[in-house]
Image: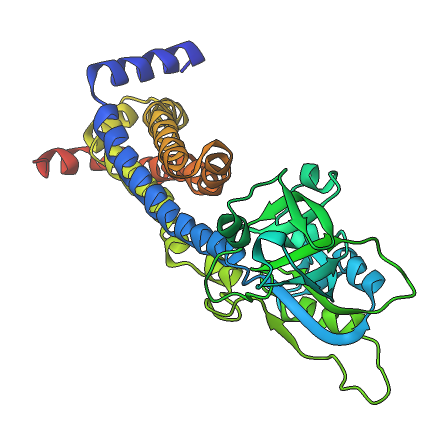
Length: 370
């Protein structure tokens, strides 16, 4: 058959309903959408756990040692990586050193002095202080202290040591996290190579034992003092390691993504098999099997492509509604391989069905029809 004849035959079969395109497309759309949305639900749940892990300060790890921490080594941790058991590397996102600097007394709270800390600039990223806030000279206070003082970023704090400008207010909830910074005033201080600090704080997300071990490289041994080799989390309420990466890779819904291409194969196989009398009759009249396969492949594409495009659009819309545009693109991209595979497996199903139909069985098909 000529290409124009093949196209014409495919179009007639679609237009007259012989192909059952609407029914096949509807079934595949429902299956593909259901599987994709179900997988999205699991992924979004893991993402929420990851955000909770980060915002609860569970990702912040601390190594302490009075005058034993090298601030330069601490700051350089962001240029190192920790290797996981599967060979991937995860960098330490932020790191900074702090040290105690006595107390500061507010003129409005003369009977309740606040702890004073000095911090290297890198601690701003650990505490979630933005780059714009870091450009303004001043001190940092927690959201708890700001609420107590009814103060906000840009205000001035009268103290017995003079007026201090609040350049940043960092989020620090009253939960199970380390509360030493909750009611304290932190002064950003440039790194001095000749000074040793008290603690090194580092943000490690996802959790990585190898990266955590790197914190011990910031400690310097001091004769007569206990070595600073033990690290701790700023908040242990959510455990030590949620293993979100492993849970993402091993999620049950990931295996279910194979349902879509398998369903596409089965639908195409049955749709072509349902037309076995028509196909056997065409073969009996001498129409080449290749021409029949080409026409049927076009008909299969006519219902698989719209079904997959519709499922993709619904998946993106559902993801955007729950998690925003940027994340929706990422989540939809995760589903695309399985959705695209359905187009291929449907063609395989069609070809398999047509390959098993024989013209010499025409009368058998006719006699066994329902």
